[in-house]
Image (cartoon, rainbow, N blue to C red; front, side, top):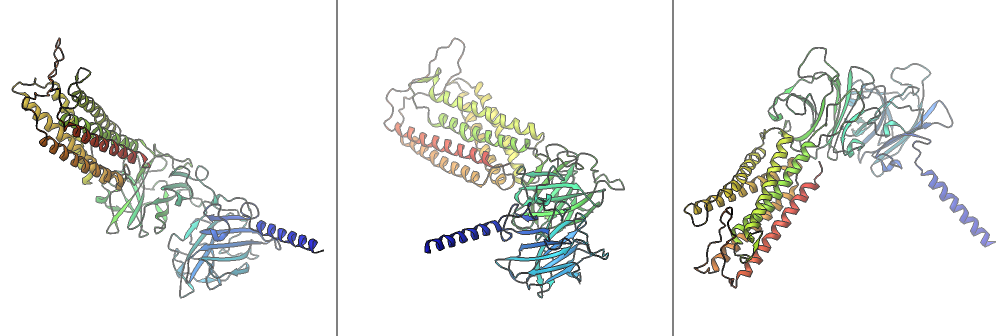
Length: 621
């Protein structure tokens, strides 16, 4: 009997557990329609916001709603609104408050604080919970239709936008502005009598919206580095609705979207959302937007700019397809246009600084009246990466090695030859020719894609371009000089030696300065390298300086034999025999230190060059 009772008890526990597990299954898309974030979150306490609706099982004239929002602590509210457009004014709003009461609003403007509470018509079964772990939760039932006509009560037989907002309560009852970020909106009107998976919970791109975003297929916008979407306004066919969201970081920042007839920022129609929740327009005549004047936001309406939340600056606005009057600074969206996205800092909270790497461009003009997605033009970012890698390999790696061979390694393997010449000479020549190929290729790559010289008010960019050109120029001149070098022992040979050495060192130093400027600027602005690249080139130069000091000390301490001949290499003439000058067969006992110092130098060059290239390659574009 006792065994039977134990088995029965175990069975009851198992059934209870199954019922509990079943009750915790996500109802969205099966028995409930849902609007929530993050996508697929359940239970509601795991969501930033959660709204669900389902038909009331006891009364078919009712729809049951559940609202849960992460509001934090204190006197707070969580509100759900039903709207015939995608705006808060003239929306049917139901507000659950932290004092466990519920009120209704029908605001005539965006300022809900000035709206009057209204009778909760058609609402029943209200339950408002107190805040638990930062979540404010409530449930209620709403009639599908009122028996009497009321323009402020929307029929659920019509598809409606669902809005969610939260904010603080002044005096425990008066709602403050929802602070922008505490507001969410379905991507399109929702059938609230249907419980299927809602488009509002799905990625609208390529379906109801055209999109330009990164990473590819990221959604919701808060998961994207940048996100721009466009769709026809459902209430006014002359408008296109835009949504812009950019990961800008913190502080006084801006996120801007531009429409352009070419692929450049000058003469683009730019709309800038700022972290102070304002929006301004620009039509810059040059690449420096900081010197451009703000202009009237013609053809713009319904603009909402949210404050920065978790690094994301988000805004929405509607733009007319074309103006009634002709304006050369307002581009008609009947024409395909490039879409540009940029972000950066605001000096003094209002003046936009240079965007640096915070600039993205569609690969081709976009039809903004279509819902197809656009792709990013990666030609320039990729060209910059290739340019940077080739310059680093050419100058840091190959040129540095070639210079060390020529300056310090002439006694190295002095009794042996490589391809008919002294080991040091051909090692120097191979490295320098390879370096020449690298930096000339880098020079061609960047100009072929950019198609212009540096045009920027940023000093680092301009200086990088100028000094880089000097380095390449000197790097090209030096091998040409070497081709016409005088024979050893001739009167002009010493002048050549000094000139060849001076041009080579100046070219190398110019290249190092250009690389430092690139690393120092681009890791913060252009995302071609990161901060580690700057410190890598710094370490490379410090170790290199120590190695040069060691070599010079070594050269001073090693007493060369007075009879030791020159190691200069003469030009080969047709029919000449190889007659490199021999070095005494017995090397100085301290010569092994030369190889040790040189090995240390090669290790510094190899490691730092590889690390720099890795840092350049791994940065996302």
